[in-house]
Amino acid sequence: MINHKYELLIACIASPLLLGVYKDGVLIETISSEKQTSQVLLPIVNRCLETYNISHIIYTRGPGSYMAIKLTYIILKTIEIVRGIKCSGCSGFELNRQEPIKAVGNLYFIKEKETIITKKFEQPILSQFVLPQYIQDIVLDEESVPEYVLPAV
Image 1 (spheres, helix red, strand yellow):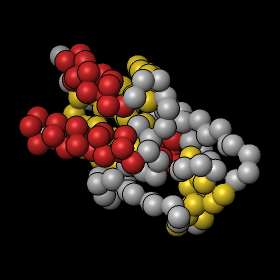
Image 2 (cartoon, rainbow, N blue to C red):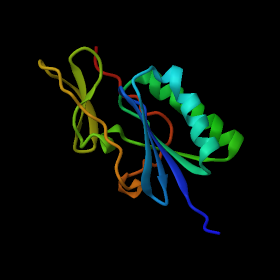
Image 3 (cartoon, rainbow, N blue to C red):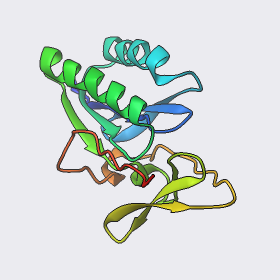
Image 4 (spheres, rainbow, N blue to C red):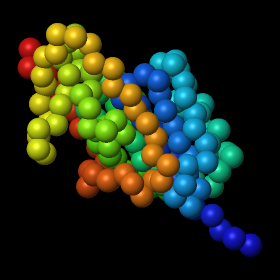
């Protein structure tokens, strides 16, 4: 009997919410929802845990929607403690080709070298998040706690 390794990747920092199930490092299922993270994340994650033997969960720990990041972290940390499933974080820039990420108003998070700052853009920027075909293409952060980058007021 072959023992497959299943991992879950969650892009929670913008709409739509994206989840990818990876089997032996290859994307096998994509789940997308336009609903609020608070409404759909837990039921979707529970379904994935019931369907697949998930051994690792990765989530976008920022920058982006603070509420979605906090909620996702709390859910995943609880799963990590209760079920022993490792939880890791990655930068949101890993899933959007390093494009600006919406902050608030016309402010966007951008990455200058290794520093994340906010920058004002007069025209809205449509930043699309995409799940990679192979999970090993994602650079994991050393930290799994949320990365809050507060824009200057």
